[in-house]
Image 1 (spheres, helix red, strand yellow):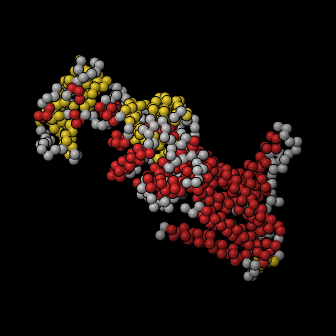
Image 2 (tube, rainbow over the protein chains, first blue to last red):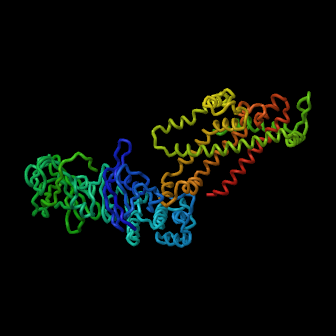
Length: 355
Length: 273
């Protein structure tokens, strides 16, 4: 258990800057998720913490020790790899015992291995070889192998991406509960925002090698620092146009919208689909725009309505699926509304935005 | 159906001559008459009682073992680097490894002769540097033969080991590191057992090639440094003693086969999984 601190960590490969000036403090027992699209530098950052990649500049500190130049085998960081990377020639028990044998604390190895396997509910499979296990079981062996050494920090590199959707959901909860119960400082990398939101204490959103925002789920969702975060965390409708005066936004399609902050000039307006109201529900909203329902997708718990509000603008409205509400069908004319504070305004920028 | 031609070819081109050769090895030899039809183990007895032949046998075995060992030790770092490189020049590097095979063994041995001779590059260079007064004898020594064969076999062994290492996930090495294993421990506990099929295949390859080497021992070993391959040739072509030549060939083949199979079995038992 330890605090982890990254100070202006950067990595440059030839002419390509993979990670730029990442500064991050991870508290004792905290679960941090590095989130971002592929190539954003999150994996390189994790590998610098693990010691597989030497930073070009900056430091990695574990409590008060500077471990920046320590090789991986002297760091006491438990790592779970995307592919699990189990030793194919060793049994489950031998895989888990490996790290303990390296520590030469040979006395209680069998009991600690048994305990770790019980923890991940794999008791009874000690003698199996990795190839005789299912993906989910392999994943849990990898977790037990990383946890049994009582690492200062647990590093998870997309640990769930090779599991099927149903299993992934259960394993997320299992990992999170285990991590909390052990109070182990954890850094996980993922590109799956749902996974990130579900597991993290705090999230670090990255793109192009830089940290865009660090914060809790609520902070990222409700107060995204920039358009990238607004688009990447949760869903957003984005309307491009410009701020034409204080609290006045005009879309490229000519719609006028009341909003809060924003400097005059080109800007993007982001709207969460569930903050939009329809028909009678929109009556009290400052912004009310007539539109046509073009597409309806039934998602079970909720329903998405794609509503065209101008020749160039279309928004997605997410409505809870309730038995007592009759929902519009494709082709219906309907009014879409939202309060001024539902709109998040960002200055137009050049950085790529996820789809 | 498609395996038909190959099967016929192997049967006619390999098995039949072997059977005939074995039959020859049981014949008798009389000076002037050459081969005499017989059914006797005389040639084998002759081989194993003559110190000259026994020395050639042990010499061959010794060179084969040394070359194989050196080959594996030298090939591993190269094979590992080649397997793990992210360089876009990787294909070029592999071509460079294969390139020496474009030159025939005899031509290559001739190349070594220009280095090893009393007036060869090495001796001239050492004399010029003032390190030696008189040329050191390198040609027609065991080290010369070993170096020569080593150079021939190395590419095969490198490529064999490299292909096996490529099948071992890089993350498995990293997992060992993150669990506290240093490079040497990682090699011993993870890489060695996982790459064993590559080491075994490479070693077998190298051992067989060395046991049967012909051009290199003849050219770099000279007439005094007799190995089994050249011995077979001498008996057949120079001495016209077909029965003894056949027996030598069979002893060579059997020794190679038995030792290879034995080593394979031993390693398999050690790394059963």
